[in-house]
Image (tube, rainbow, N blue to C red):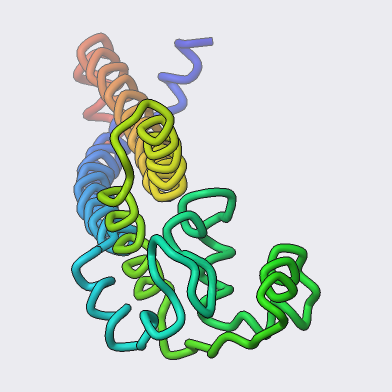
Length: 216
């Protein structure tokens, strides 16, 4: 079977195979560069900036209705953002809580009814990244306000792990894609190298006259 495959491939196909191998190497380099750029973009997108979050918190007058550690017109924000609520929900609530209430979201209705159905302003001007920065600021401030004890440290670690896991999933998916693509290219290059080796061996084994007749 191996001999049949070798005989089916002519020496003239040697150059095209070499060209394919070279182009696959170029493709590998380009793929690595593209994935590095995408990885950097994702890391930038998921990074949270508490300093910027503080500025946004102040600029949007969040302190008028909220304190981080005490209930005012609205709930204390520290416990709100660190216990029980997912980040996606918090983003939706801050950007447009009225939309969640209209959809009868259970979490939104619970807060709405608990605070006498007093409407919260809509912050559609804030992007997802802006809200994440505000949440990061609230979490960092809330953490500094807590007494040092085992229970609070355990809660803080749990929240930190949850947030970190949510942010790293896109990166993990990208790395897996990169690895699969790289393995495919490596296998392709090995296959091409084997075919080239078989062609070289065939060229050495066959008499020179046979090649000269074929050229004519």
